[in-house]
Amino acid sequence: MKMNLRGGWVLIISTWQMWLQHRSFFFLLAFGWMIPPLISLFVWYTVSGTHAIAGMTQSEFVAYYLFFMLVNQLTYSQTNWTMGDAIRSGFMNLLLLRPLHPFFHAISTEVAGKVVYMLFVIPVVILLAPILHPSLHTTLYQVLLFIPALLLAWLLRFFWGFWLALLAFWASRADALLAIQDALILLLAGQVAPIAVLPAPLALLAQLLPFRYMISFPIEVLMGNLSLTALLEGFAQQIGWLCFTLLLFLVVWRNGLRHYSAIGG
Amino acid sequence: MTEPLVLVRNLSKTYRVPERAEGLRAAINSVWRRSYRSVTAVCDISFSIEAGEVVGFLGPNGAGKTTTLKMLSGLLYPTAGEVSINGFIPWQRRPEYLRRISMVLGNKSQMLWDIPPLDSFRVLGEIYRVPPGEFRRTQDELFDLLDMRPLLAKPVRTLSLGERMKCELVAALLHRPTILFLDEPTLGLDISMQRRLRRFIAEYNRRSGATIILTSHYMADVEALCPRIIMIHHGQLLYDGTLESLANRLTPYKILRVTFDSEHIEPIDAGTLPTGTELISKEAANWTLRVPRGEATKLAAFILNTFAVTDVTIENPTIEEVIDQLYQEGAL
Image: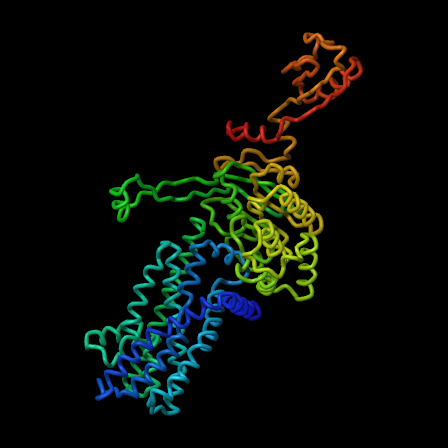
C-alpha cells in the first residue's frame, strides 16, 4: 500500500465537487447532524438552570455540548456509508481494479467531509457561545492532552465504522447494524447525557464499551474533570480499543475480500 | 520462443450458491440451515493470447465469459488452474499489474455521476500517476477519436448511454493500458454508436498495439473486431480460432442464388448438377442451390459461362445461424 498524495488530494476535491452539486441535500444533512446535540444542550440547559446536576453547572453543560458538536463532527465516520455502498453497488469492483488501495478512497472522503462539516459547526458554536455563556477552566496541559485524545477518538471511530461497513461483503443488509451502532453512540458516547450524569449501570457500560472513547472522552479531557487515574485509564482504554478495532478491521478486510473475490461482486 | 502475453492453464471456477425451496417455511428454515449448491461457471479452460491480439469471447448468457474475464483482470480467485499475464498473477492485484490493464464493464460506471467527465478523468489520471503532459496528450487524442468535446462540460448523469460509454472508454484508456478487457462494451447502444465504438476500438488497437479481450452478444462486434474468437459454453471451451474457420467447420456449404434470364427458364437439368449440390428452391427464374464450399465458385463460373443468367450470388449462411446452431447443440 504505497502513498499517493496527489491521488488522495484529487479524490478529496472530487468529493467536494460532487457535494457542491447537491448543495441543498448537503446543507440539510449537515444541519440534521447538529440538531440532536443541540436538543440535548437545550434540555440540560433548562434542567440545570437552578442547581448543578452531578457536579455539572449550567455553563458547564453549555461548554460540554458545544464541544460535543465539534468533536462529534470531527470524528464522524462516513466510511460506514461510503464503503458499504461501494460494496453493495459493485463499485468496489472498480476500486479494486485501480492501482490505489480502496483504503485511500475511504480516507479521502473522510477528510473531505471533515473540512465541510467544520464550515457548518464552527459558525454555530461561535454564534451560540456568547448567548449561552459556557464556562471552561481549561489549562494548556489539558489542551495538549485533548489533541491526542481527539486523534485517537477519530481513528477509533473511523476503523470501527470501517469494519462494520465491510460486513456488506457478506450480508447486503449489514447497514441495519449501523442503526444499532448509532443508537449506542447516542446513549453511551455522551450525546443524550454526559457520561457523568448517566445512571451508574449505564455509566459503567459506557466505561467498558468503545463508544465513549469516540466522542465523550476527548471532551472530558478538555473540560478538566478527570483525575489522573481516570485520565490514564481513559487513554489506555482508547488505545486498547483502537488496537482491537484495527485487528478486527484487518481480519474482516482480508476475509471479506477473499469472500468477495470468491463470489464476485 | 517467448512466452505469450496471456497464458491460461486449466482454469476453473466453481461458485457456491445458497439454495432454498419456495415458500415462507423454507425461508424461515434457511435462516439457520442453508443448503448450498455448487455451480461450475468455468471448467478447465486453457488458451494463450499473444501481445497485440484482439480476441472475442463468445457464448450465450451465463456461459462463463464474464467470470473468465474477471479472473483475468484479478477480481476473482479461480477455484483451480493458473493464469499468467505479462508475468503477473492477476488476482494478486499488484499495482504494477493494475497499471497495465483496464477493464470496462458495460453495466458499471467508473464516472463520478454528478460532475462533468473532465473532473473524473483528472482523478483517474492522478490515481494512475500519469505525468501531466502525457495525460493531456492522451486525453486530447481520445477526445478527437471519439468526437466528444461537446460532452465534456456536462454532468455525467445528463449524458446518454452512448455518450457515457465514450466516457467509460476514455476513463479506461487514460493510463494507456497494454491489456484491455471489455465486457459488453456496446450493450444497449444504437447501431451507429456501436459502429463508431467498434471503429474506435480497432483504431486504438492499431495505434497502441494493446491486447484487447472483449465479450459481446453482438456478432457484428466480433466480426468487425476479432480475427480470433474463443467460444465458451457451459463453462467449457468450445472453440478457439478464426470466425471464418468456425463457419467453415459448422457449415460446409455455401448458398448460390441464380436468376436466369426469364426467356430461358429451366435450362439446367437438376440431375446434371455437380455431386453434393442440392437444389433448395426453384421459383420461376430464381433458383437457390446449396453447394459444397469448395465447389461454389467453380459452379458459379460454370453457370455463368453456360447459361443466360442475369444474376449470380454466393452467400455464406449468416453467422448468427451458425452460432445459434452451435449454442443449441452445445458441441462442435
